[in-house]
Amino acid sequence: MREKMYPEPQPVSAYLCRELECSCGRVHYADIAAVEIGAGAIRTLPEYTKKWGYACPYIVCDDITYKIAGAQCENLLSQVGVYAKLHIIKRLGFDEATLGELLIDMPADCDVIIAVGTGSISDIIRYMSFKLRLPCFTVATGAPMDGFAAGIGVMNVDGLKTTMPAHSTKLIIGDTDILRTAPYRMTAAGFGDLIGKLSCLNDWELARLVTGEHFCGNIAALVKKCVDDILQCADGLKRGEPEVLGRVMEGLVLSGTAISLYGDSRPASGAEHHMSHYWETVFEQRGVRAAMHGEQVAVGTVLILMFCEELARAEIDFDLARAAARSYDRAAWEAEIRRAYGAAADGVIAIEDSACKNETAGRLRRIDAAQEKLPLIREKLNALPGAEHLAKLLRTVGCPCAPAQIGVDEATLKDTFMYCKEIRPRYTVLQLAYDLEVLDSVSDRVIERIKRDSA
Image (cartoon, rainbow, N blue to C red):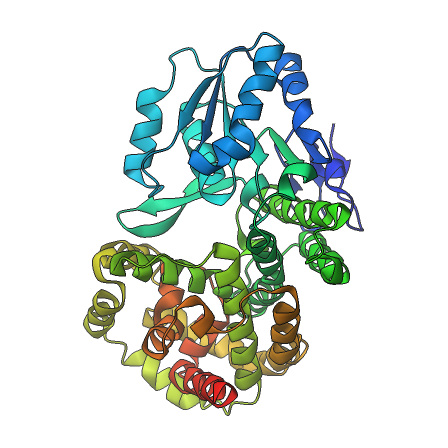
């Protein structure tokens, strides 16, 4: 039986396994059966496994998460007569090779896959279990990102960070006794990932104004509440207070639930995430270990807020923008993509072949819409939190807030502004600036600001 979508944000339990008919015209549904967050929550794993009739779990972890919670999961299940196959991942690229390793070792009678870890492990298990039509659980060993409840999976495919079709995990366990043992850096990264919703929600609003993209105010309000709640408890974050860790985990799960409710990552991922995905792609090719996803998103969010501040006061020459759209040189664009993306360029070019977001006709339509809605666009940009205020908050909680802190040099930063939008077919403030022929000049102003601030 369908229920009406709540007019005000609710706790995560109110959204689980319910068909919610929304004023946005869609029916939202999150296929997550249970979320357990709190001290000792891991002890509920055997209860749910037995209650739902699973007899042959496949536990997946790495060397570190095995010691943190994997062995405990195995022992708790064996105590109630459920004997799991445990696999410790050797290929940590979280790519096609990792997937093959997991499939080779999976028992033939497996009926549920249990991911013990954080982002990469939970992502690849949600994708793998979806392809195998098996349910999956997630036992979190840290709270660095919001993907636990998402109905998508992110993994490396042909060297490119790719969003894959997946399903939601059936059970999420966030034991605060375990989360307290995680390096503080992971918790700060989770804070950074949640902060990123400030810029991605703005991107969604801009897409609604300029392209007429579907927008759900109720989902947006739910995500916004996740950010507001975490901002209120920032002071207790570094002290490792269990209740604060629980609130961070709840915020991340609720944000991920919003992705599942909406059916894609639009409510929780925008230009700040595109920056993160670009950095991960190029760093991997350089043989450099990238910063944590949430740390990259935090830095990306500060950069996008700075970009929005500069764009809001930029003079727009719409005739120049239309002339640039009409003179679009696909061959020149492709050459730049091959330079900027290296071995991952073919995947990016394939995205443009499908989306055609840079082609003249679509760009001209968006320029017309942007000219008509320019006062509203400026209003949205000016309503965002200040970049310096956010950077100060991130410094307070010990999360990176500047490109240099995560190994992004000036040349890479310029390429990020110019080309990270190509990594997804999603409309963001960077596509808006590209359409208006100010992406180059506005990004230069942001980079100059950063250089002045660091001098």
